[in-house]
Image (cartoon, rainbow, N blue to C red; front, top):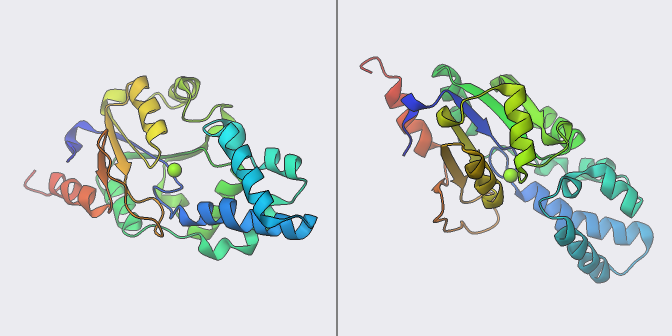
Length: 226
Ligand SMILES: [Mg+2]
């Protein structure tokens, strides 16, 4: 699927790409509305509908990913509610093997997530994947989400990677389109980000359901015979 000899840098999304998106979907669509309705003594179905509208209005914007925004808007301790369901934070199958293979192949490996720094911290603590990366960034430190070209320009200034020799893996098609517009050459979509949802049929990008599809070629490329 990929020409690994032509790739030096690997940029990886976190939620839905390295980790099961079920945690995030469950939190924002079920747990938060339930607990919010409980704490504020509101009707849960109304809360769900209101939240869905608020999410839609901000989708793809950095604010959507910002815990501070939701804490302020809802007057609720988002992190306290996250801890209540933190057992649902799970690494996807074969991710440790993939990250190990990337290190063995001497690729530069960077985590680039729209996750809020507090959420990033919680997930790194929980999954212990920090050591696999050369660098880890939340896009909040740049002030733009991956959906924006401004993010890619700022990130490029910071990391100085060659877009022609970079692979980017993400589960968001909007984000992948944004990376493509910026000029990142090697793009792979995750077809099944949420373990509780059916896999999507993706036509715009190469896609995987399991990292073994990528590991196979990577380990072939670094075998002693060349
Ligand atoms: Mg994602």
